[in-house]
Image (cartoon, rainbow, N blue to C red; front, side, top):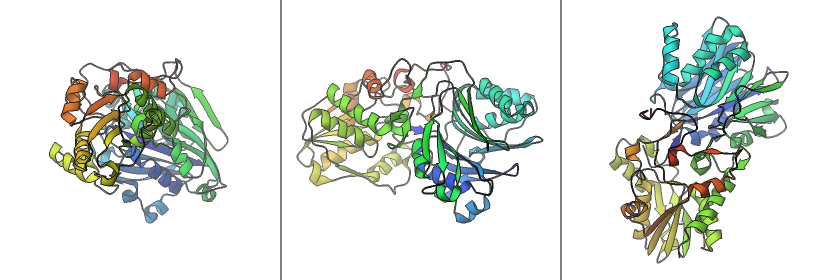
Length: 473
């Protein structure tokens, strides 16, 4: 509901070699590191003696879990989830992980992404007598795996994955293993880490393995980042080994470009690309493409700061802070109407007046979605004495909805859709406005024929076919 796109969620899984150790505390800290990926709900499921115990609730990780709750979650393997809803409403029923208990065992699934054929699969499962308790497309996955489990773990997983379409990064917990899977296009990220039991939080957990949406969470628990899970790859972690195989034919890699623009933490590495480095390169390219005479360049905290540094380096414009962001303001995406969103924005950012007074200021942001934040920032900068405010954006105009795990406003609410740059600039009250080109963004991501990206929200060209009249759920 606010002026940024929101990722669907983050997943984190732990498998410890020592069955007497508890994985839940590590998952808790991993989810804290992934909190930026979802703030609506959080959950942890643990496996012990082939039984799954789970706790989940609405709110931030620290609101759902405390030491007493964590102490009740006993088990050497666990998966966790933080959620921001795209498919399914924001209710406790849709909070993850999803758990299925059946005759052959129990499984828990944490899913980041969106299935494009969820309605079809749900209907087929309902026709076969399987019931659903939630509206989330992620429950489709856990029910499919449970339905196929009599074929064995590996066959159940591969049959499920071949049946679903769309974007997914999965952490699946069974009585046998911790499993990770990534969709054939690699739209959503997933990576593998190793616990050595030698440092930080891992010293209490011993040796083991980790699956995580981002490498920053692996770092946070004192583990070693090993590698990214490849698109179309299935990884099965057991006490004895880590096995991996490819479950799909080679297809075009199409990692979500917005992971680098905004979603991911700057200290993460996604598919060998350093997120901070990509943002700084985007700023450098933006400066090369659309330099303007100015006295100061500032970034919109937080994801606009690396790009502002890069822009200043290329153009020779001094970099300053300029804008301070309050980290204790209520999350603006819950504001139910535009007026309340604008009030939330007004207390979320403040200007360091002495830094901008009487100066020509370049304001660098990661994206413009509805325009609420940009319009307000131009106003408060000029009220603080800035002579000119020039907006530079290190992503192309967002003109199209996303169907693969990003909460995108409807097309009519995207301010760049059907609006010229000049009209948009006037609407925001800026002295000039420029976006990085699609080619410039790809250059910042070091794109090649083998390393390509999903640009659907910018170009309307999607790596997976979607219905022309499909609504954002």
